[in-house]
Length: 165
Image (cartoon, rainbow, N blue to C red; front, top):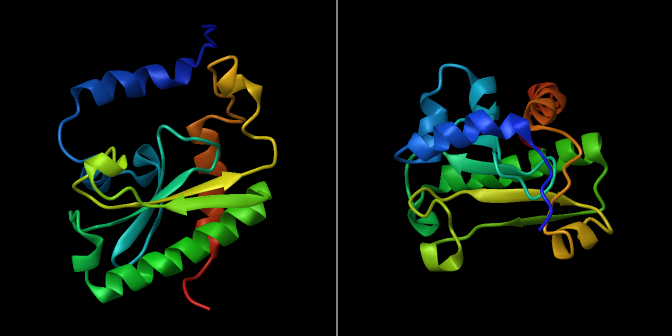
């Protein structure tokens, strides 16, 4: 297997190995949204960059409340999550011009949830050909930008937008 250097991940890997608890609750405790990669705060949910993205612009939408059960969440929270999904799609289309999206939740550990106790929705922009030979043959992912650049590109767009129709 070939290796490609990604030095910007060194500090995060050091921190994550020492981190205990929920990554979403930890992000919410941060005094600086940029440091936690929080792009937008709604009334019940927030939008955050995935620190281990499948593609550039990979977001997650999570409730403020630490809850694993989507079906037991309050209606106003799940309704807002849907509105934040619409907002995320609009912003990502504007900035990255993806040709499609993967969106979804992995509810429960056996369903693939890396964080099973705090439900969250993934929003992943996709392009024709983005599943090229590098991950298959080279066992390597190619990202077009680092997380800080993605944050700096998306944050102002989220701040300009409003929720709703």
